[in-house]
Amino acid sequence: MPGRLIALLLCLLLPLQAVAEERPRAGLLWNRSGLPATFPLQVKTLPGKDYVVFLTRPETGQPVMAGYIRGGQFFRLLVPPGTWQLNFAHGRTWQGEEALFGDETGWTATEEPLEFRIIGTSRRRGHLITLIERNGTMKIVDAIPQQWCQTAWWSSELRDFPEEPPSPDPETLRRLFGVAPKTGLDASPRLRYLDLELQNYTRLCT
Image (cartoon, rainbow, N blue to C red; front, side):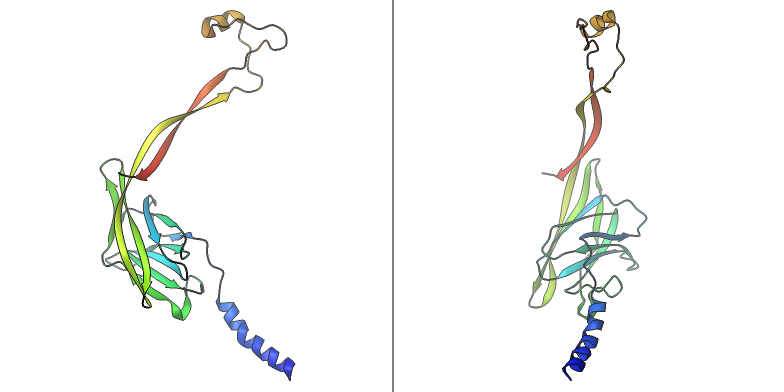
């Protein structure tokens, strides 16, 4: 009898184990917009539940991008340019992209679509969203526009030539570098050069 009872309990638990799936890593799930994702969306949440944020077209409700948020962890996602409605699915037990969080899936959305666009020549407009659960209801308590400034500059790194550079003649060395040739095994000086590379730096505008 005890063995039959254990077998019955296992049969009841197996469907539950099959439904639950491993939580995705925080970040992008998919991008079907066909556009480059270059504008920052930051979302603040509390621990206890996970979230999926969907960017949808306001005129059709069609989702174009989705990102997974682990509750209480820092989340920043680059999104395409445009005006998007943000819908948040939330729950505790991840059951896959089709079922999301199963029967307990809740939904929260921004009141108005949010605009992600370039301002001027070097500023990108993004948004900071804060979600908090109050009295069993998930609410967006803040939807703050943010402007990110992008600066470009040339960085340089001092690099060596290959281990065996060609040996210029002594007169060329004196004329170009003002050094006298060395004698012995180390007759070929190690020459160095600056490797220039264009770097981009993005920060919150002050």
